[in-house]
Image (cartoon, rainbow, N blue to C red; front, side, top):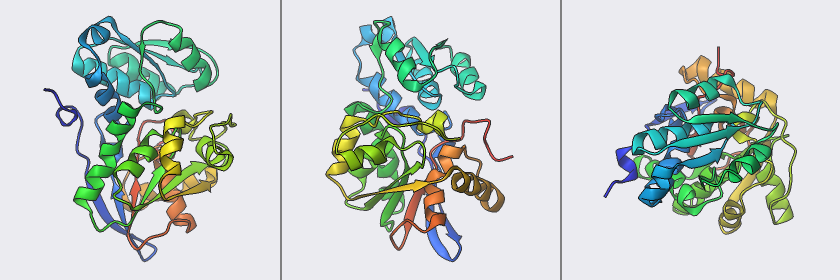
Length: 287
């Protein structure tokens, strides 16, 4: 039986000191596709029946999930169609096509692209609101717990909620800090409202974190665990991205620096937090 570990990279952890504080970085930007999304995509495709995979799958994405589904389909011998909004960065759409997936640009937002993708009639691969996808993303935190068990809080950038929900499930009771850009914070609004609500998406990190509504499954998981919701400005997350490069030569996209921005802001509890650097696929990489 094929397993997830055959297709994804076990990314390293890195112990650092920042402003006199001990931290652990989870270097998930070194994943095969440049983001954690491959874990959930492969896990979902492995769970499909063979006819579904051969017929083809479809998804919608701002970029990273689309790359992951295209890579997963390539690895597992399936065909993928990926819908992206017209605003999706070329750095990501080129990679989707290079992996053999059919790329369709549709709509101005992820939500519009997703609606069109669902109408295609193929098996739809959720970006985050799926238990099998969340299970795949949870392996990031399982590795953290195994490789750095002394960590007492885990800091996670949040879009639709798949990664942070997986973190909550696999954390072993460790405190979870869910971090979002101020103008791209669907999960923050969902936690406040007690249910997913429509949210404005306007951030330099929107191509990776631009969900207009948080996933209902992820929200339900977070409501059952110890989670703090933190917001950072675009200026703060870009400063965090630049600092990761300048001090550690770690290249991440804006979304990949969101969790670190919360640490620099002083909004993360714990004696030894672990910061997940979740992605490195953008023209906004440190330069």
